[in-house]
Image (cartoon, rainbow, N blue to C red; front, side, top):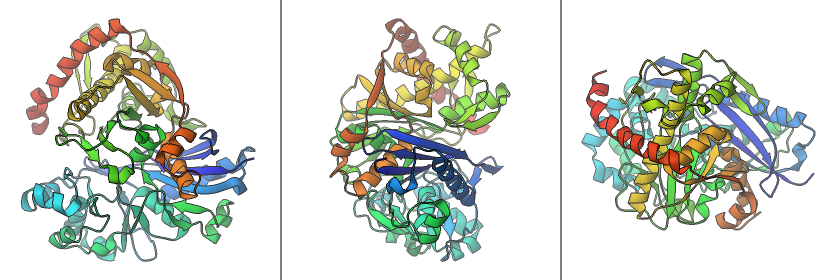
Length: 508
């Protein structure tokens, strides 16, 4: 067996571990899930110990497969959900459950920061104009200071999900610049000390910052023995699941590339030579972060999770985990039914705002909606309407990105769990009017992490080289013109709904 790169991705619902050869071919993969705890409507947490146990189990599953030899691993890369905060003391002990990215409890604190500090100062502190949201570190830390001061006093470092796994592997506290946004200046890479002074919180809680492909440590002896892998294996700092996904679609290799990374949420964006002046509610990543191109993108709140919710809450389906990851028993049958429904779901439109919405509206009070329901609608219409509603949100973000950048694209590279559903790929093509490029490897979190590990060990010199070597398009899905006309009409209505319903959402 040849050399292998290992990618570890700590997602919202499960840990994924992928083993790849140096050409980007998946040798094997393993998944393991963990629970989410929701004490109140806005408080959403996970236990980092359960992430680590899931990683151990997944690596054990890889070991059991004859094709994967742990001695062949030459590098480990990390990816994960963000912004998710883990609070640990000097010994690395977890001080409380992690507050994950979907948690919006810090609404009051985010409002205080926007009012008291202001947009201009925050941009100066952080090196970019970043939307100060309840799930970002400044608001989270201020909430902790006000409500759980004893935890903050004991906190030695604040880590992201993938950083915590990195600590367990290496014994080192580290992160990367992008995942630490809100705590570091994105231009300089240094801690935003002035911001921490205003918040009255020690800047020492920020871990050492590395480039995502830099080796931040090596697997510890006791961990290596426990996992059955060499303790000398280098571990790179890693990136967010979003940026790993962008890397693994090949989009960071050139400007003018559009991508749709599916999963619990959707991430839709477009690469360009520089960050546009007007972003219209989207987020931007400057080229000094990617070291290639700038990115304009929007993360949603409930993409694949909308379908999961419908299967569990409306249809009573149960979640199982297998070689392909998490799935709902009976979902294939429902999707087959939805495939027989005429595009447009008989005029029913779904707003996928089940947990509020991030881009482009940034409203934690937004709610999910089915509108246009009649007596003639059956369950298949509801399922198709959900698939279409998520596709509308993708088109919404893509058109804003195109307007901002000043160019249109005719292709979108798709990856992630949703890319496995052929019906959904066709709906996305029909709704957006673009050709969908499905990648050979759709688990972009682990592939992107493995690619970073490849850069870290010197496999390739830069992002362009490793993208050519490890990213491959498997198939194309062309839009159907007859379907586009119907979706164009409904999409116009879709865009009108949130502004009309916003006052209602805020009263609920």
